[in-house]
Every structure is written in structure tokens, then in C-alpha cells.
Image (cartoon, rainbow, N blue to C red; front, side, top):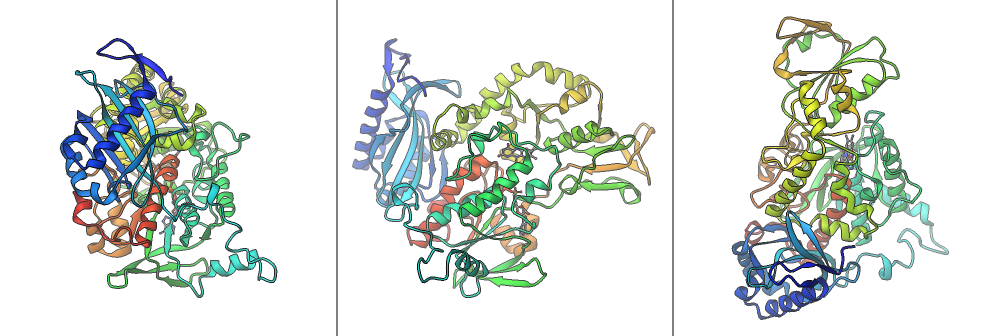
Length: 602
Ligand SMILES: Cc1cc2nc3c(=O)[nH]c(=O)nc-3n(C[C@H](O)[C@H](O)[C@H](O)COP(=O)(O)OP(=O)(O)OC[C@H]3O[C@@H](n4cnc5c(N)ncnc54)[C@H](O)[C@@H]3O)c2cc1C
């Protein structure tokens, strides 16, 4: 953890006691909040201060990017929320640390509202007048009073499937519940990947009935069915699922298949209700009843209609393959598939493959094929952000491997309001650029185009903006540099014949296999197919930043009542599943409406 006695004050040059500065700021913050005087509250923020709220103050997810926006938000929410009881969080000592290019005092704290308990992070900087003011503030709801999750001190006496002596028994009761022959689930979660299972576990611990469905035959097949060489890119401590950390025996990096097995075990241990082999086909919302009627195709082909109140879409965002139009591809007679359907054989000796797409999936598939003896060409459409995985990219998540409690790491990872998030990643990209300079120079020389995004914010912001656009190098870049994987630009492709790819300079190569690692279609196409154009348009963009600097329609109410989205990496699934589940719980308790209102859109 950071030092308690940290750097010197910029103004006074005297050592700073981070704990007492942070504690004093919290006391003053609570005092001015209780007086409900907006000016007084703003005087505790810097001129460029910003505030991120995860459901605690606004029952929504917001980045308030400047004091003006903070003032407007407080006008709207302060009275009803009634925040009080601010204390430093005993789990983590305040410390002096650099954040996004500034020296700050970073402190974790807890607080209470009229309805629940919250936690947060404040970053204080020493202003020109010597006063410490908040540069960033995070407020996050942790529980709703009287309805806390069944963990720790609130542990259940026994499972609700366990009806004791004289009862029908745990297994029979679970099986009966799984059938939903007499009941309707309150929530249906589409997708049993890490996102769907995380939110299902959270809801279960809040006592809210949720059914998870997945079209795959087994939980974890979403990982098992990907290319065989897949390893997770983040170290194991980043990837704990809610309530159940990995054992210490786990490897530092897990294979995709091993993680798939873990997901299957997780669902069983957390007593989640999952229908596998079940495809979500679509549904309609009844505005009056505030319920969905959804159609599910079961493994045996029968269609089942269920009527949940809430639908949580956890399908890894869109899973509709995006395949570019290339002249003559219809005439090509060799094997061609999207990377999501690609099943790698053991040996490709003497075979020639073309992989379209130069992001993570594209380079990983090319890497695997190359190692299995194929002659591989990668076709690149636009510049790519390439970062060496180890050690360069791992630094982005290093705090998870320092022994700090995962919940504190999650707060830290979520603490940046949008303007600061961009600054953080610009700073990070500056050091990545230096660290990986040789790699990037060599790649460029090999004809592979690179960049760090439109505003030099690097791979993480690329991911938030588009869900891709980067490659974390695990050896594929070296194969390109050594010429073992050839690179061509998309403009160089002329057309396909029945067994060849013809380049724009007239040369041609025989091709046995084409893999399109070209990503997925916009989510709107999926929503259109499931719910019709009106609902798809009502919801609008999913993922990518919205005007307020939050991920569009992710983890919060959307304009379509009863539809929620969750996704991202395991880290996002773990932490945001809490806020999503708390919002559904708040709707169920009547603490917030199912529909968005004007204040939520502000
Ligand atoms: C090489 C590689 C390494 C990666 N490493 C990491 C890492 O280290 N850490 C990390 O956090 N992330 C990593 N990722 C990213 C990871 O792929 C995604 O974060 C993750 O799969 C998204 O999880 P999810 O639960 O949102 O969706 P998915 O895992 O895609 O699960 C969605 C599920 O929805 C189901 N589904 C879709 N449509 C329907 C339907 N109509 N009806 C029923 N079911 C449906 C699918 O079958 C699927 O099982 C990596 C990805 C790759 C390719």
C-alpha cells in the first residue's frame, strides 16, 4: 500500500500526513453536504474537479466532468440521497501517489445514504492557496440497508434449496426450480460467460431469482470453442469472479479452456440456475405489466416462452460476425470461416492461410497456424495498437498482484471520471511508447502499421471505444518481424479465384484456408432481430463512450425499460455486476423506477 507519510506539499515543502489531510477533507465534505450548500461543496473541489458516481448518489452511472456538472447533479440528488457518516476505509491506508501526471493524496472511504452503504475514492491535490481539494471523487453504492447480500455476517443459515429433514431434498428442489414449470424468473440473463454468471451470482446473493441461458452445450464452451492456443491476457488475480477467488494453485496465466472449466464450476458452487443449449430468440415488452414475454429455443428444439421483469444481455456484446465484402470470395472453394467458428487442426504443414484482421484474434490465429506449419499472410485494414503483453501491458493491471484486496483494486480501477480516464491512459501510453519502441519500429519496418489511437490513449481506450483495435503481443509480433508471418494491407487485395488470392499488383498466392478475424457487427443489428427496429432504435448505441463519458447503455438502465447490458473483461464483469444487481434490487424494492427519468438523462 502507499506510504502514509508521503511527498512534500507543493506549496509548503513540508512532509504531508496523507491520513490527516484525507480525514480532514472528509469531515469538511460531510459538514458542507449536510448544510446542502452547493457553493460550499464546490469549494472543496479543484477548478477542474470531477466526480464519478456508481449508483450511490444518482441511482445511475455518471461522470460529472467539472464543477458546473457537479453542482447540477447535487441540486438534483443531494436532498433525497442524504449522504452522511463519512470515514476512512479501514481496508486501505491513504497515501501520496502519482495519478495521471499529478501528485495526489489518494484515500478510500465509506459512507452511508438514506437507503444504503457506499464506498469511494477521493484524490486530493494541493491547490495554489495551500488547501487540499478534491481533483477526483468516486462514490459507489455497496449495499441497500436491510437487504444486504447473503455474505459474511449476513450468511444464510442454509441454502434455500435445502429443506432439511422430511423435505424433498437439495437435488430434487434444485431440479424442480430449474424447470420453471410453476414460476417465472424475475430476471433472465442471456449469456453464461463471465458477465452473465457474475451478475447471476450477485442477484442470487441478493435473493433475486435469475435464470441464465446460453446457446452453447456446456457452460464454458464460449472459451473452449475458441482457438486452442488462447491464454488469458491478464494475470489470474485480475480475473477473480465475485465471491470466489481462484486458489493459489492457479497458474499466473490461464488457458481459455481452463477458464471455461472454472466458469462451469463457479455456476455449480454459486448454485446458479442455467439452461444451456438454449437460444434467446427475442421478445416483446408489455408496458402495462412491466414484464417481458421472451422466446427461448431449448436444446430439443422446443420453444419456451417466459415472462421475466428484467432482461440482462450478457452475450459478449454483438456475436454477429462482421465479414468484409471481397470480390470473388463466393467463387473461392477452399475453407473459409470467421475466427469465432475457426477450429484449428493439428498440422498445417504445406498449407497456405490468409487471415483477415490484425487484432488480437487475427494475430493469435496467425501465430497458432504458423506454429502448426502453415504459410500465413495477415491482411491488415488499418493501423493497430500493439503492446507487448509482458511486462508492458501487465503494468496496467499490476495493482491486482500487489496483495491489495480485490474490492479496493476495483474501486481504484473505477475511480477515474471520463476526463481523467483519458489523461490516465495518455500518461500510460507515453511510457508504453518508450518501453515498446524497438518492437514498434521493427513492426513498421516489416510493413505492419501501428498507432496508439486517435488521441494517443492506447489499447484500453481503444477497447472501450470499439471493443478491439489492438494486439497484446504474445509472440505474434516477432513472427511478423522475422517474416514468418507475412503482412499485406487490405488495399493490396484484388480478388479471390477458386483457389487463389490475387493481389492488386497482379501476383497471386494459392490459399487453402481463409480466416476472417474481422470482429463483430454493431449490436443494433442483434437488437433489431430480437426486438424489432423500434426497440433497437430506442436503445441506441451499446458500448463505446456516450456524451457523458460513460460506456453507452452499459451496466445501467436503458431507454427501453427492463433491458440491461453487461460485458467487458472479467474485471468489468466482476465489479459492474454489483452495481447492475443493486439497481435491479432497487427497482424491485421500489427505490428507483424501472424507467429512466429526466434526472437520469441530465
Ligand atoms: C486471446 C484473448 C484473450 C483474452 N484475455 C482476456 C483476459 O485476460 N481477461 C479478460 O478479462 N478478458 C480477456 N479476453 C476478452 C474476453 O473474450 C471477453 O472479455 C469475454 O469473453 C467477454 O465475456 P462475456 O461474458 O461478456 O461474453 P462471452 O464470453 O462472449 O459470453 C457470451 C455468451 O453468450 C452466449 N450467447 C450469445 N448469443 C446468444 C443467444 N442468442 N442465446 C443464448 N446465448 C447466447 C454465447 O454462447 C456465449 O457463451 C480475451 C479475449 C481473447 C480473444
